[in-house]
Image (tube, rainbow, N blue to C red):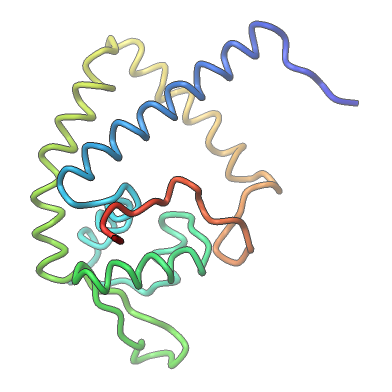
Amino acid sequence: MTRWLSEEEQRTWQAYIRIRLRMDAAIAAGLARDGLSLADYDLLVPLSAAPAGRMRAKDLAAEVRWEKSRLSKHLARMDARGLVERTPSPEDARGVLVELTAAGRAALERAAPHHVELVRTLFIDPMTEDQARALRELADRVVPSAENSDDVCDETDSCDADPCDADPCDA
């Protein structure tokens, strides 16, 4: 039996949807001004934090929770733009290493200050400290249930690609 949302629950869900859609759109537009897509940024950040700017593609997919084919397609676009380089793994002939290039690091370093300022202006600054704490506590409760759901894809699943994975630099 379906447990339909009450009117208040529906308003809560719609509030989350409004935040997610508008924040994603604003952040994507800000990054596009710096020549990156939101997907580029999502991959460049963990690569920049990895030892020597290098990760196995499998580990990168797990880090960003992307399906293997989505990651492969996007890395091919980033490789063509010189942001990353893909090489066979020396330990595993089937594995691929993804390395942040100097151009990729420079693009991330150019975009990061604008990105952080936008996040601060649009998201952090409008909240009180109590609201920010409540949001963190909410995430700590909600995220684990979403991660443990049978409806969530992992890197071995075959899920549809993210429709928001548009890359303004593909043209």
